[in-house]
Image (cartoon, rainbow, N blue to C red):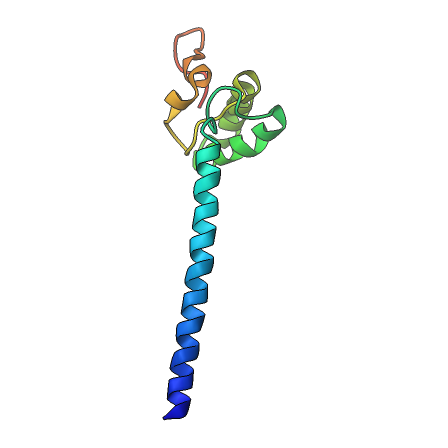
Length: 108
């Protein structure tokens, strides 16, 4: 019976420690999120970050090579890439408003 109580007590201590760790990590994530409000806006990236951001942006398209090419071109000009794989262009107006000669969207 004493072993069961000791095990139960040890389990409670371990669970409370894990809960404290998870809470601390989630608070750090919230602080990073709130301190970086211009995460996707114009000028939010350096040109050296464009390849990785465009790889993320074009990760699910079947036209991967063309998407990467135009995304990097747009990223170098606008210094931003919208979040997600598709859409969300309103968060990066330069990226959204750059058009082809025909009037279609230049940036994926």
